Image 1 (tube, rainbow, N blue to C red):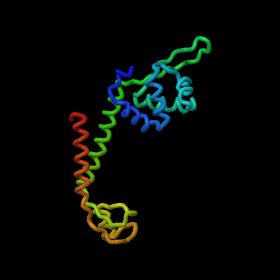
Image 2 (cartoon, helix red, strand yellow):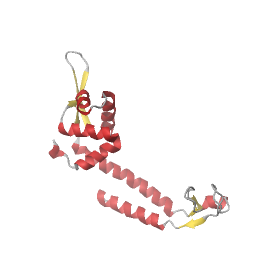
Image 3 (cartoon, rainbow, N blue to C red):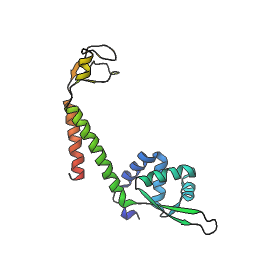
Image 4 (tube, rainbow, N blue to C red):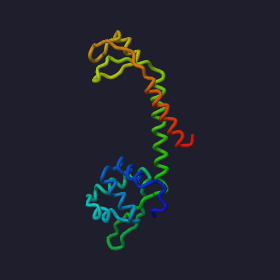
Length: 172
């Protein structure tokens, strides 16, 4: 199964950490080593409560990182779920996240490029737009200090660089 995984273990564990913390990493490690494993077996191997394992598996399932197959236990009549990684979809998950990040960065770039910003110099106060600065007669709405124009070119340049990087990764 490991030969199918097109992303590195580090990448897979980073995704698991984002979605499920340290417990998520433990579950992914068990799934990497075992195909078609039950929640109970994962719980036993990781010492994570069954309900927590189930919750994290469903979170991973919602992001297409794992899949399950279900069958009915002949003795009890209950459904049993067996879980496994979907390594072929991990790359698709990463690409989807990059697209989401790209849209947010592009929206932020548009906002930064189309506004003029002012700040009082107090690190506790947020920067404000020209429109708000006009309304407050160029006084900080939080501390009443005078506002000065902020050069946001470094932010714009940073956003442009990140957008270009992600577009390069995506092949856009």
